[in-house]
Length: 317
Ligand code: FAD
Image 1 (cartoon, rainbow, N blue to C red):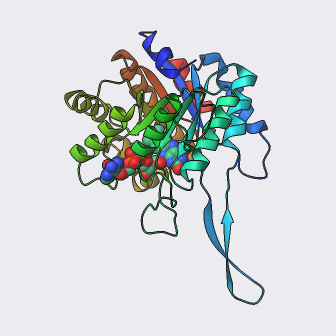
Image 2 (image 1 turned 30 degrees about the vertical axis):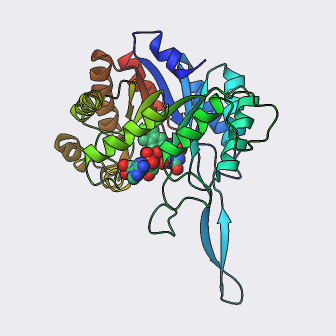
């Protein structure tokens, strides 16, 4: 089932959540346990992140440095298919520009199609930690809008090999990312919205937002998108704060603000248990308001935690 059909055929807010593939060396049991803990809230779909290769420099016995390629969380394609078939819930694997040539992207999409996956979230990805800025692969997509164009091309049977005889269309429903507080590289929100519109004009079916902690920012973002002519559903992303250092870590990593009330409450916590309680209460407050105001779906960034997500969902739905 396509996410756009799930959203467009219902006027109530759905629950969906995002998971990370297991770290290399772990089996899938923790991931499956996380899903099973949340099944009672009837998730309509599950997002699965993708993590590109990183380079690490390791010291050799002779003292010289050796550049090693490390992929800490492989397996998105296989795990996405496994979850979808095991639980009968549509899975939305994230597809990145970064680290992939267009040809590799096409192969990933062919594999996903064979495995029965109908939805993807198309993203640029971040630059490598070892690079000053994002650098696409030679013959890779440089922006998410180009990735969307490639995926839409396959909807119309447009493969990279123009001499291919059989050109079965691969019809994916495409989500893209939106930033209520703007993407950290964008000079301003208006420019960022122009780039968001390029993704939608290229054929994206819906938008999922970066996490935010002030709902007004989401509502204002939706208004600005509508004024800019973006009409697709805009799904809010919420992140229940679970540890105290997220007070400073989240603004740094995601270029977002924490409202003063939340920041003060977290700063006053004596330990992570107290911080988790504050984060859970804040997420309940946010989620109830988003449901009341007709958000199409709640995209919950779980980071593999379930006790707080369960508490939030029990309070909200
Ligand atoms: P783009 O839409 O390409 O935008 C990136 C920047 O380039 C923006 O500043 C934009 O304004 C600008 N830009 C866009 N088009 C143009 C253009 N044509 N010319 C000039 N500038 C342009 N990262 C991962 O590595 N794995 C994941 O699984 C993952 N999941 C995510 C899920 C969600 C819901 C969100 C919100 C983010 C996720 N990310 C993930 C992070 C994401 O990859 C980063 O935020 C990345 O820096 C930008 O990705 P994008 O798709 O928004 O890029």
